[in-house]
Amino acid sequence: MKQVLKYTVFPTPLGPMYAAASEAGVCRVTSGVTDEAFATDVLNRFDAQLAFVPDDRLLAAVEDQITRYFEGKLKDFDLPVDFLRGTSFTRQVWTAQQAIPYGQWRSYKWVAEQVRRPRAARAVGQANSSNDIGLLIPCHRVITSDGRLGGYGGRPEVKAFLLDLEGTDYNR
Image (cartoon, rainbow, N blue to C red):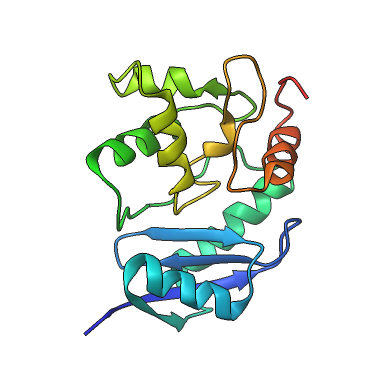
């Protein structure tokens, strides 16, 4: 039997935001997709089914905190996360990125150094591309050493929007 993840959807400046959670914590946050695409994404990523649960306490907290983040009223998320996939390395990268303060950026090289793999800046970029919990694991705060944005899942305008929202100083 497949694991069942609860989910909700709510409006944001990036369009509808989808959030899914296991019993342990938030496992997926994304935007820019349709209901059908989100369901397919969760099935492919986690081999799980979805159950719409709009009155779940954790999902209500996710919506509240992300909404306040976009309003500029929240700088630090206080939500349990559940890495349902990823290697030991990718999980280390995601954990290191949680330490990057709101309104600041760090380089891919800096993240690689934090996980004791100083020559693995490209691998950090790959770990970012598989981040299931965008915003909560702030991979948008990781840019190139010279201040260029680098990748963001083919959506650099979203990365720029989030950095601008936080008042981050980087090369445009």
